[in-house]
Amino acid sequence: MARRKREPMSEGKKNIIAELIEEYDIRTAKDIEDALRDLMGGTIQEMLEAELDEHLGYSSYERSDNSNYHNGRKTKKIRGNLGETEIEVPQDRDGTFEPKVVKKRHKDISGIEQKIISLYAKGMTTRQISETIEEIYGFEVSDGIRYHRPSPSADRRLAETSS
Image 1: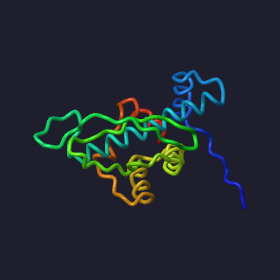
Image 2: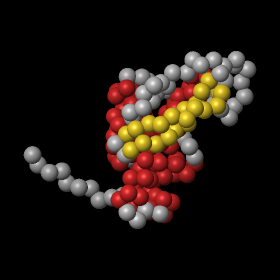
Image 3: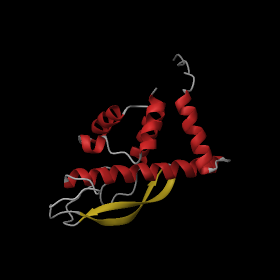
């Protein structure tokens, strides 16, 4: 089997790595694992928040006359290849929210964890990530989830990585 030629790392990726090293004060392999675990938990959390927003039909930052609304969060420990981490699963008032990313009573995220890391490493666009999630998990990721991002700086970093 022929070896693939390794592409040089883009400036965007180098900048993201430098930011992560500074943000997490990375000095050892364990520090890298801790940072990745934290990032994974944050990513899963954001996906769950976006799922609930989609379920309710509006963002938690918007007003609505809907009788079903955001109703706090529930702490959940999840396990993956990077170890165990805690997330806050959003809840709805009527109890009808059924998360698809981390299903109720499920704790193992090793499958999705590897996919997310791989997608980040490839510098995929949000559209490509959405299509991949749909292909893997069998549910369509709507525009509400697709474009839900934690911060403008995440948008900037994603754009730098993709270029």
